[in-house]
Length: 590
Image 1 (tube, rainbow, N blue to C red):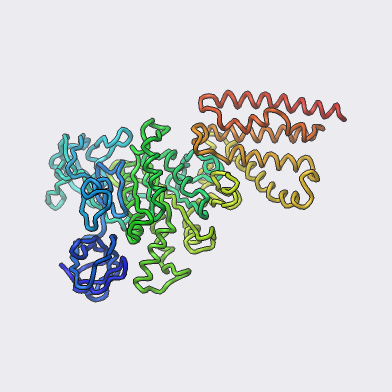
Image 2 (image 1 turned 180 degrees about the vertical axis):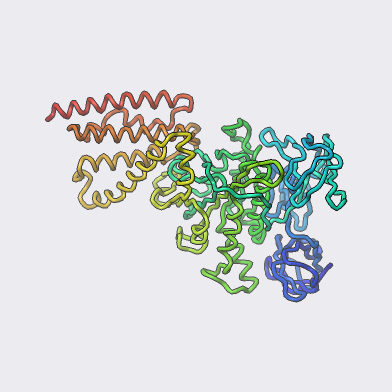
């Protein structure tokens, strides 16, 4: 079925003669067959969001509808892939037309010709349902791709065979209950705006280990949880997301560069192949899918890119894997919504954003979760969503930040003053929060004892006390404080600089395990305990601050992973003796 263009307004095209088309149908526009999606229908007139540059397109151009919604191809070959916002493989496009992407180019999302070694795990005459695993394909050294029955199908396998196949060849035949024979391939298609089904969603009870101390100890996020990283320009949002993508203990990472600068995506493309996954020793790209829809690419495709990314993530979640989706940034995605809404002449909401901004954000984040996967076999998978927010001028009262805060349960608030002081990650400990603390406490208590959360509470209390003491210091000076308050300020400084601050460019400090985090914080808090006791026995604060082991605590985070337990124990032993000497010296002075 085809219609005619009657209006072109940037990425918005209005066409008539499409009375039989449906909302969300994919269409091809003009002689170059530009790809677009129907946003609204009014009579036989359709408003179309075009995902490519529309310059040169005019009234009278033909519009053809495909009759199907915007969908992604799911199957072997996605890992290590680099896609644009509508799942076009950028590397394949370069091979076909060169580095400048030609409009209207059509390339399959995954390679339809490449052969994969399929090993069947199901057998003929097996009763199967949607989500059941038919067999496996070793996609990379890290990812074992599980070939599943598409959701919604049910029946008995007539035949299934192992061997070398491409993604479009039949590997099994399913006979449904009404007698139809359905050929099954290694590839599925799924509409991006519809979440993939699951049996049950569980409350998140396991933490996501990112290796970043301020996140893991102070404001942890659960596997299957949601988190936001808001912050002004230059505060380190992208680096925080890079660190989570690099070091998180998940099986698959989907990184969506949604409207951010191209050089930031270039950093990802250059770094990830060189970095080694601490769990597997393989390149990080062996478990990563990149979606690059940078600020210079068509604005409408930004809106689709987050749905493309999270649909791919749900597919791997359905295999029983832990998946992380990193969206950088949802503010640029919201700006694309605002532009399209303005061109559609919809009634604007706050600051010109569409009235449905909050519901669209919720639709994205609600697709995260820890779930029981569909199928007869009991499998658990998780999808964790982390989105950056780039509020203009760092103003967290703007609509995208406020709508995000109402939805997500972890809020890592980046602070420009910390970034200017070169304190990274620049996550401010008084403005951030995690609502997963209660649900994660049993897991931490089981694996690390109750001391982990007790130490966290003590450290947070010190940082809060420091904030109130700083106001007094500005009035009367540090020397006017009592020895106990001077100690509070000093230990809070140690927590900030020796524990929360982390160097992403130092191999030994870029990633920190839970055990190491626990021991380092315990070492700082032991110093505080011993010093408070020593002050009560007459030791001088100046002598306690001058002991050599206090400086060694500051350097302890750069100790190699295989040496830190011995080094930390040695520092604790010498620290105890040096504080005892300071007590003796104070007694002599008295």
